[in-house]
Every structure is written in C-alpha cells, then in structure tokens.
Amino acid sequence: MNRLTKIAALSVVMLLVAAMPALAAPADAAAPAVTAATSSGFSIWLGGAFGAGLIIIGAGMGIGKIGSCAVESMARQPEVAGNIQTAMIISAALIEGATFFGLIVCMLAKGPWST
Image (tube, rainbow, N blue to C red; front, side, top):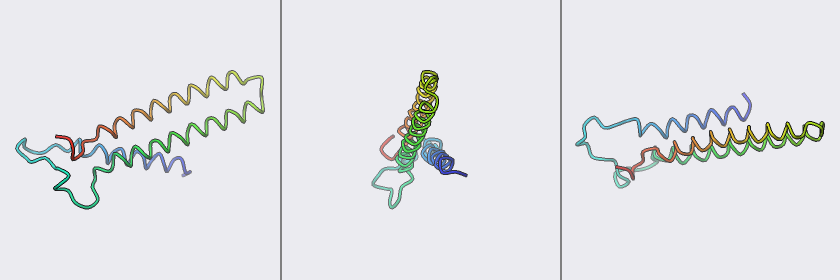
C-alpha cells in the first residue's frame, strides 16, 4: 500500500470514530447527557477533530499531486494544455466536494457540548 492509500484508510477510520457517538443513542430519554465535566482523560469526541485534520491533509496532497502531474504533462505536450487544464480543474473540484462532505460529517459529530 502506498502512502496516499494509508492516509485515505486512516481518514475513513477517523470519520467512523467521529460518527460513532452520533449513532449511539441512549436507551431511554431520561438518561443524562454526557458533559465535559463528566468525561475524563482522552475523549472519543476528539475523533471529529482528527478526522477533519486528516481530510484536509489528504485533500491537499491529492490536489497537489493533480497540479504537479498536470504541469508536467503540459510541459511534455504543450498542444494539449487546454484539455489537461480542464481535466485538472474538474478533478480538483471533485476532491474539494468530497473534502467538504467529510468536514461537515466531522463537524456534525455529536460531542459533549450537544444535547
């Protein structure tokens, strides 16, 4: 496995960790909510922050790789630079869309501050 695949797998795991508290609902409505005062030590609520960081790192690496390969291919074949630039912009936009979705999932992860 190359480095980008490992980072992508790790970010998926962190997204799942961030979404776990939102999926785990209390058995009865009368159960007290977890607050910051009752939690101690390392908190699972930091999963959203780690997931967001990994998402941004992965997106930056992906867009950087697209840009570097596009410039290299434009230097080799200047006559197809317009087609390469169009494909590069579309690919970067798709990466940004997936990045924003992942960030929203991380921000919506239920934390100790929510009720």
